[in-house]
Every structure is written in structure tokens, then in C-alpha cells.
Image 1 (spheres, rainbow, N blue to C red):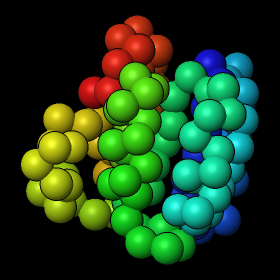
Image 2 (cartoon, rainbow, N blue to C red; image 1 turned 30 degrees about the vertical axis):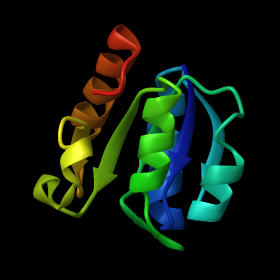
Image 3 (tube, rainbow, N blue to C red; image 1 turned 90 degrees about the vertical axis):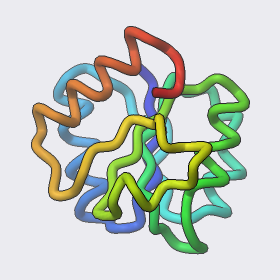
Length: 117
């Protein structure tokens, strides 16, 4: 799958990219800010991994824009699922620090459903 990563910690972004590429996925973009994310929403990717707290604020608007485009996503965050707004409470969520297996299972789930989870 072609994946967009929104993560402002360069070490975590690199880790995510390495894990996903080792499984044959292609990273389309690795972005660190809300402004970048909004500019790249139409870059032709299959799904996205979103940290919640990134440069410029929270990624909830990006998640809602992805949902409107029917692009699946998963939050990968140290925040709590209860921090999500009501409209995003059904979204897939992987807690940091994450286990590689859990992350890959979430991405596999997205590829099977092709819907925001």
C-alpha cells in the first residue's frame, strides 16, 4: 500500500517508515505539520498514519478530511483514545510506544476494509 505518515518526531517517523517498508509498503510522504498534511491530502495514497499532536496542533481536521475522501487512517499517538472528538471515536488507534506487530495488524486491517476504522 501507498502510505502517508503524519508524525512530528523524526525518530518515530523513521521507525514507522522502516517498519512499513520492510513489509513492502511504499511511503508516499512523511510529514510533520498540519499545514503540510493539508497540502498533501490529494497525493494519491491508500491510507495514512496520524500522530494526534503535531506541529500546528491536533490532526483531527486531517482525519476528518481523510474520512470525507474515504481514505482509511489510523491514529498512532501517545494521547488516549478518549481524547478523540466524538466524531472520530471509532477510528483505529495504536498507542505509543507501539509494538511493531500491532502497527502492522492495524495497517493490514485498513487494507482489508478500505474504510476509516
